Amino acid sequence: MSTEQRPPFPPFTLETAKQKIQMAENAWNSKDPDKVAMAYTVDSEWRNRSEFIKGREEIRQFLIRKWSKELDYKLKKELWAFTDNRIAVRFEYEWHDDSGNWYRSYGNENWEFDGNGLMRKRYASINDVPIKESERRL
Image (cartoon, rainbow, N blue to C red; front, side, top):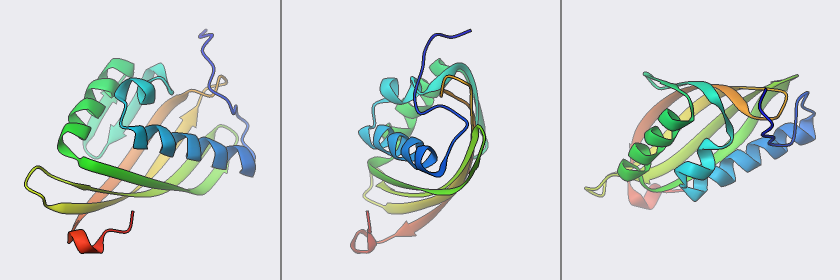
């Protein structure tokens, strides 16, 4: 069993679910793949769009690729629902590609945590919408 811990721990309350979401938002907005990857179990399972990812090192590599393509990335997450060791989140983020084309990406995530507060499953469905730079909200 892992001795790593990432409070708050399940079972979640409204307050601790919101805290967990804010911590995730802050970490992802840092765009630091090493920092973000440490919030997940060593064998964490992801589905991100159509990509299936397993374990921290694959998560880290995925994030390196993501943030090398999604420039000036800015994310906002919101609580959708929670129970016991699971949290559902809706999110949107904005970014541009290396040609200066801006996008807003919308999605939903389902998270499952272990007893130490590390995320062991993350399932994300995401859609991208082209926007003008003048339409940015984040």
